[in-house]
Image (cartoon, rainbow, N blue to C red; front, side, top):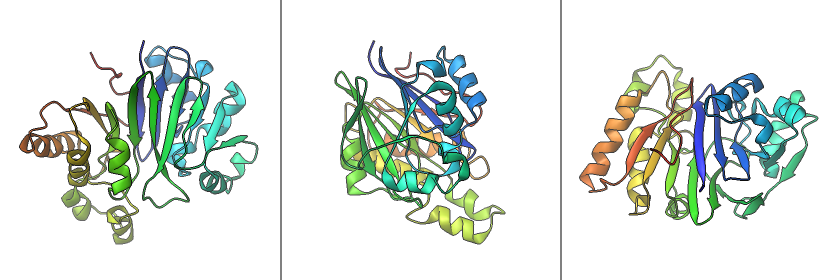
Length: 261
């Protein structure tokens, strides 16, 4: 069976994506408690005991909270770059985590998966997105980024499927009761992608080989799956990219397993 993945959950409360071949299974981020991770894996017929590794995009708690207990109980390797390791180690609970370091921009292997981290703009020490390849298929995961860049577009053009941030509707964010400083952070180039910004990025990378895009990290206060889907679908339709299927992810349960039925 070819490469498979499932977004186990994605929001500001927690993020984790399961990716697997027949012989290797990993998580991209582990921002839920160990119990929640185990429960969500069970919902898709998988187990934490089969995991070989967690690869970490950046050190924010909604991406790393479950790592210490996951490693203690199941012995998984934890891969991150030096900046992310440094940021995470500021929290005492990460003092005993054993890290395997990668270098941003340089591919590395976990089992039969080839993982390529690439730089993204976000307010973290050294944040990255990932390409994950196996047997001629590549998927991309970029869940926290404030803006698109030429590098991001070049990397994501290789993908059959994407997990891409569509964090907020700009009007809903500006009308929300959030503090102005937080709004400025989210809207900044090191913040989070809006629905329209996600659509613009997709128009740059949605070649004929891209089949499915999972919209991730949707704000529960400043977005809605219907808004995100409608906004991005309209932009893709105007551009004639009718072959790309958009799918939501959820804060409280796994999304659809890919490849999709």
